[in-house]
Image 1 (tube, rainbow, N blue to C red):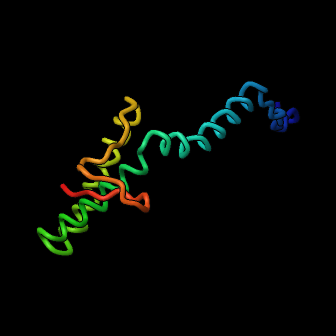
Image 2 (image 1 turned 180 degrees about the vertical axis):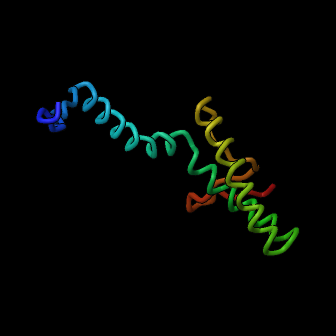
Length: 111
């Protein structure tokens, strides 16, 4: 037994990546690229922008700069949620005021 020592050899296996895995990764990449367009189409972006602006304005009036920061963050979350729900259900955004179109074609609210 003293003269029969065997060397340990590592076997290198070739890396085989199935075609199905490549197609799955390609589909995932394309889906991630399409997410911003889908969220914008459902109203998420517009709802968040409008909610953040309104929350920042109201929070700033009520509690100063700290209220503006907190109100903007909360308003963005709530506005985004309502934007998605309205977009998914197909509820159009409508003006909530009574008004008229002037001779230049601009909408004017009087109430």
